[in-house]
Each structure stands twice: as C-alpha cells, then as structure tokens.
Length: 170
Ligand SMILES: Nc1ncnc2c1ncn2[C@@H]1O[C@H](COP(=O)(O)OP(=O)(O)O)[C@@H](O)[C@H]1O
Ligand SMILES: O=C(O)C1=C[C@@H](OP(=O)(O)O)[C@@H](O)[C@H](O)C1
Ligand SMILES: [Mg+2]
Image (cartoon, rainbow, N blue to C red; front, side, top):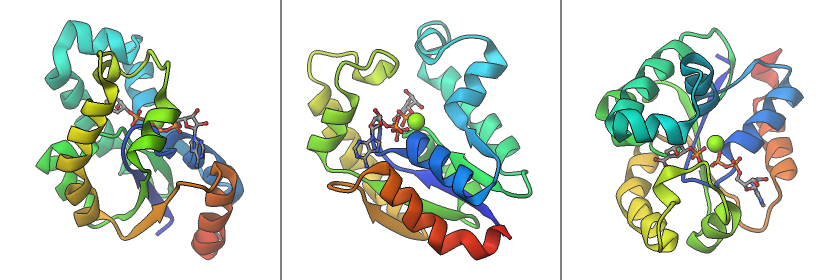
C-alpha cells in the first residue's frame, strides 16, 4: 500500500523530504500541520495561543485520522504526533519512516524559526533535548524504518526513499 508516513523531531525534514518524495513517486503529499492550518484558517502559533497545546493535539488527531484514510500518498506529520497513544495506535499498521536528526542538527535547522511555539523559549536546545528523550522511544516503537539525516541533504534522502518505495507507487 503506497501510504508512507514520515515522523521525527522538529527539523528532521519531514515536510521538506515528504514534499520531494511525493513528487518523485507522483503521489499526493499532505502535511498535517498545513492541513490543520488550512482547516482552521489560522496558523499553528495562533492555535497554540488560543486553544492551547491540547486543542492543537485534538485537531492533529482528527487530521491524522482523515489523512490515513487516503488510499495512497506521503504524509508528513508534526513532531509531536507520537505524544498521544491514540495516534500511535493509528500509525502502528502503516509504513512509518522515522527521520532522525542529532540535537545539534535539530537546533541548527530550526534556528530563528517563529512558527514552532514549543521552541519560542530562552533555551530551545533544552526543549529539543527533553522532547527527544521522551519521543525517541515512541518514534522507534512505530517506525518500520529509521533514517539518520545528519550529513545527508533532503534531496538525497528523498531519492533513497523513492528508490525503495517506487515499486509500490506504480
Ligand atoms: N537533511 C537535511 N539537511 C539539512 N537541512 C535540512 C534537511 N532536511 C530538512 N532541512 C531543513 O531544515 C528545516 C526544517 O525542515 P522541515 O522539513 O520543516 O522539518 P520538519 O517538518 O521535520 O520539522 C528546513 O529549512 C529544511 O530545508
Ligand atoms: O514537535 C512538536 O510538538 C510540534 C512540531 C511541529 O511540526 P514539525 O515537526 O513539522 O516542526 C508542529 O506540529 C507543532 O509546532 C508541534
Ligand atoms: Mg514539518
């Protein structure tokens, strides 16, 4: 079944690699964050501000359910998708690619970003480290494949995955 879901921390490259991979496989691409913003007509920081993280997570789970109903495609999730057991149960039967990135790379790739509410703090490194400690085992538990992204550019990662999943997308 050509439904491929990308998971991993902020800055791992889920949105970027997912976009490139979908193009290479000629499959629909959906980013859960973009889908949430499209449905609400508001950006992620606004949703966190007005509805809190739990309000965002409620929206995230609904969008995940809808996206997983697609017959085929590439889905880029938000880094916190694994925080809810309900989401992990939904993802268990699916092809899940865990894009890993070192803490330094996560930090470098999300530097000066204003769209990730959880990183708008004095010490984003500490936040990313804490999240990685909690989430890495959760990503691993649902992943069918793990890709280390440090030292590889997003295009080469997308090419590698396209070669691997190309036959499914025919
Ligand atoms: N493998 C990579 N190497 C270097 N930079 C990357 C890589 N993957 C993504 N990036 C860059 O990191 C930033 C975050 O990527 P993004 O796709 O938004 O990550 P995510 O959706 O996992 O949070 C973007 O500027 C993107 O161009
Ligand atoms: O890790 C998280 O909890 C989050 C990651 C973000 O997506 P990206 O991983 O695409 O940045 C976005 O869903 C939101 O800011 C929360
Ligand atoms: Mg993203």
